[in-house]
Image 1 (spheres, helix red, strand yellow):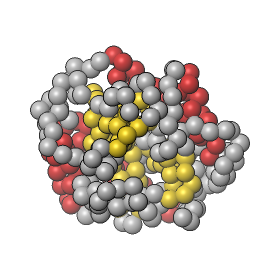
Image 2 (cartoon, rainbow, N blue to C red; image 1 turned 90 degrees about the vertical axis):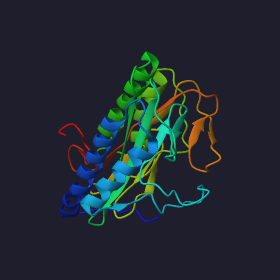
Image 3 (spheres, rainbow, N blue to C red; image 1 turned 135 degrees about the vertical axis):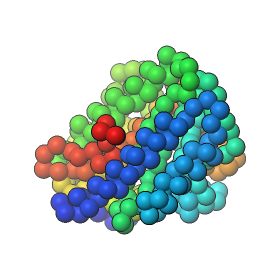
Length: 258
């Protein structure tokens, strides 16, 4: 895949996509409650896409590892499901750990983001896992500066995981975004500092740490999409789309102001 380097004008053109992705994640996370069906969350995201005149990145997505086109517009991963959760007829239960992952194209520009929340009464260990995963994301963003390399971002994420006794799976991680959802460079969730692709101003990447309570081994559901922990332990997944600049990185999918 080609690596896209955007101009400052193009990064500004990308901002509405980032805001829309943030709005959809905020709305679906707020709607996730005990008794709510995963298909209802997908329908909410679908309505927002139609109302905005945006284009789903997921519904026709069919990479080599997928058993079929995804067919839905948001990933809903529950408990030991941590990535690529295919929405299905399941009503959320008290204490479920839910990860929502959403990417969308607005005016030809793509942004990608994810959030993990606890539905109803939380387990402290789940809240801690979300906090650690968020801390790793923040560390990765802090390392996403012009002059650094992708390995610096990966190393920053992995250091947080190790500090909290978590193992890191590097099979799935962050990636370039721009006109398409998944591009180069790959941003693993662990790595060696000073290695990898140079972070040049204009590069836009999705940084997405995901951790499991007690393993780094994963298995695939029969649906050909949902990725689960091999030992049944729960997982958390967070992600932001970040633009590299000459100074501070820009978090394109920031939800803090919503």
